[in-house]
Length: 249
Image 1 (spheres, rainbow, N blue to C red):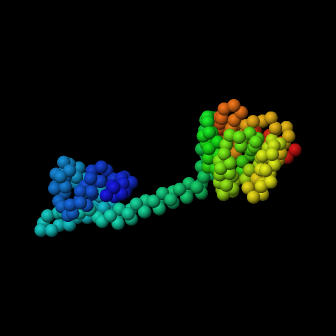
Image 2: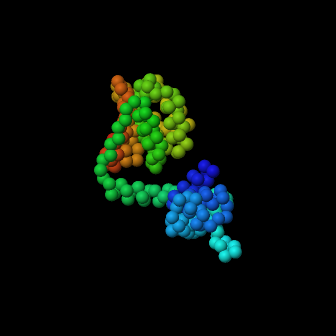
């Protein structure tokens, strides 16, 4: 019964319509007046609810011996309506995905405010990596100190991000401090859809910077773990230019 009630809620029926359907489902063929009386519902509200159910295909009526009675449609009708609605939602999602580039361009053009999100603690890494994986951009630029990062975050956290990034086809361009961790990273570049350049001048750096789409994210772990994401198209574009010059030098 619980699944049937939840299904009716998902079909966005009124409270009265849901109550009438469930009672009719339990008692079988009955007059609207008897159903309304059992639910302490006034007759006009009951008739409106029955009309909503009939329009949805969830209630039938017949006239026997001059008396009009109604009965709830079987549960497979509810199932069919839910599947039809689910298919429609999938269709809408596919249309939005197809037009995502145009929609994002329109959205960003209408809102030029800089957005800043900040976090603290171990959730910082998860929040930033998830944002990268949800981005429509297919590349990310990273400044990293692998030795410092691996002292704070587990190997599984590090590896899971790489696996998901590769699965989504997001290529990483990495400027890494000259550490043993960076050399290990570089060793698996091809397999992990990445280009790593080791830079001696970056060795003192104890944080990571991620540049992707119209965002720049910073993850710090020198004394305390913190993170923030700045969303601004012009700022992100400038960081990309500076990164690319450093990367190609």
